[in-house]
Image (cartoon, rainbow, N blue to C red; front, side):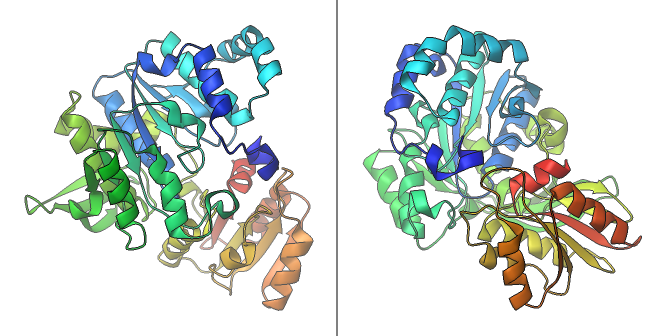
Length: 413
C-alpha cells in the first residue's frame, strides 16, 4: 500500500491494471467518466464536479484517494460510501486472480470502484488520479473531459524532479479527441500540454484565461463568497462555496471551466452549478480541506502535504486572526520536510509527532532540524498526544493548526 509504505508499493507500468481491467470485462465502459490529475487541488475539484453533477440529477460515482478515516471514503455514489458487503464479496469473488497477479493496493481499489459503479448503474464517475497520470491505474478510462489542475514538485522520486518532467507524466491522461482543461497557466509547462493536446487532436483550455477571481469573503454562516469575472463575456458575479480555504479560488475556476465543457455533453444548468458548489461538503462528505474543528480556540486542519499546498495554507494562516499560533505537525519520510517546515511562521509553538504509518518521519529527525532553527517545540510519541498538548496550552483566542501530512490530519479527525 503506497500510502503506508511508499516506494516499495509503487508499480511503474500499466500491465497489471490492463490485466485486471480485461479480467473484469472493462467495467468503466458502462458509464461516462471525468478524469482529474494535478499536483494540488485534484481532490477538491473532483468533489466540486461530483456535487454539481449530483445536483443536476445524475447518479454520480466518485473515486478519490487517499482516505482519512475509513477505506470506503475512496469509493462513493452520491456521497454514500461503498458498502462493506461489496468489498468483502469483491475480494472473495476475485481472490484467485488477485493472488496470482498480485496487484498493488491502489490497482485493486481502482477496479473495485469501477466494478461497484457498473453494478450500481451509475450515470457518470468522477475519477481522481492517484499519482502522475500516464502510468496511473485510472488511466484506462476514456473520459468526456480530462482535467489537470496544476503542476508542482511532489512525488519527484517517481515522476521526475522538474516541473516539465512532472507535466509530461500528468499529460499522459490527455486522450484522443477529448477536451482537456488545465487549471493553471505555468510558463514551464504550457508548451508540454499544448503539444500533447495537438498530438491527440484534443481541444485544450487554460481555465485562468476564461475566469478570474477578483476576491472572496467568508460569510457568517461559514460559506466562501467568491466574486469572479467571466473574461470572455466581461461579466462579473458571485458564487458561494462551502469550502473555506483561500486556495479553493483556483480550484473553483478549474471546476467552472470544466463544467462549461460538460454542459455541452450533459444536462447541467446554472442553478445546478450554483447549488452544487454551495453544498460540496453536504453532497460528498469531503473533509480535511481547511476544516474548522472548533472555535475558541480555533482549531483548523488541512491535508496539504507538499511545498505549493503548504505554502497556500500558510498564507491562509497568516490571514487568520489569532493571539498565539500552535502547530501540530508531522511529515512523511520521502519528502524534504525542512523545506516544508521553513514555510510555517517560525514564532509559533510547534508540536511534532510521527503519524502511525511506516512512512511517518521520526520525531528525532525533525527535532534535530528544529533545534538548529531555534524553534520553540516539543515532540510526542503519538499525534493525539501532540494534539491534546496543543489544546491544553491554547488560550481562548489562539489558533491550533493540524497538518504537514494527510496522515496527521487523519489521526486527529
